[in-house]
Image (cartoon, rainbow, N blue to C red; front, side, top):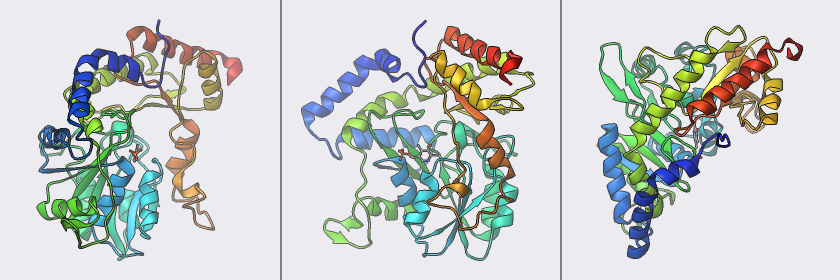
Length: 381
Ligand SMILES: *Cc1c(COP(=O)(O)O)cnc(C)c1O
């Protein structure tokens, strides 16, 4: 059995080596490293894949969030509601722009932002909501869009972990995550479901005016060369990354399908165990692309399980060990824990197992056996 990795980019590269090497050689020979044809081609391929009017590539997923918020012309002190249980990038950009982050609790079933908690947090200063499609599972966009409409709020979907997921509305209509809100963002960090060979990100929108405004922001606020109309940033996807992404986009559905198969195999092996809660999934599972496969370990020793797996050369991850409301950079001087019962529980219970498109059945079974043998050895409780 091959060594087990959290993600196995080497094995993935070996499968697509010829295509990737060819695409890279093209960029190197043309030396169009910035704004080369590969960037435009990838942009339109991704627009077609997502069924969205505008994809605006940028340098990384954190920039994508910052630029999306800049695109909304918010004022310092305006409130932006987001989840307490997510990667810090989301709340970091809110702080950088001198907006006020309002953190809310998550749903105990999906670990995604809880629409009831959003509703309770809305004030006259609220301007936007940033749902995160955490671990690859679509947030409850129908409820979120309804709240946004009622209170005249913007919705920016952080789709860094969810690219390729399909959300189904109650009337049966469907849309890719990241294309439902006013803006969507993603990251092409190498370990994401659609990963570059370096940094990359993108912003999505169906709104022509927002797209035009944001295309200027990513390019120093220029709409005409050397005329700077707004304070912008310099944030570009380079041609080398675009060339890699253009190749890999063709395989995204295949990669996500492999992840789903791995997740279902894990869950089948774990389901019904008294100390394990497997990830929630809806019927056909279109709404989850398993960026992470995250278990909750209940009434047992989660940290002991981490040590046990590491001792057996099985990597695992805790996403995330500290809720945002307790991070030094973002916390209030007096922390009120009452609004965050779910997050506070999740940080102590979650563990993410290796998840990628190259996991073999043998590896999955081996990982599951090690998890179960630790949990069932009562001396470890
Ligand atoms: C990865 C990630 C980001 C940031 O992406 P970078 O490309 O690393 O800047 C933002 N939000 C979430 C939820 C992420 O997982």
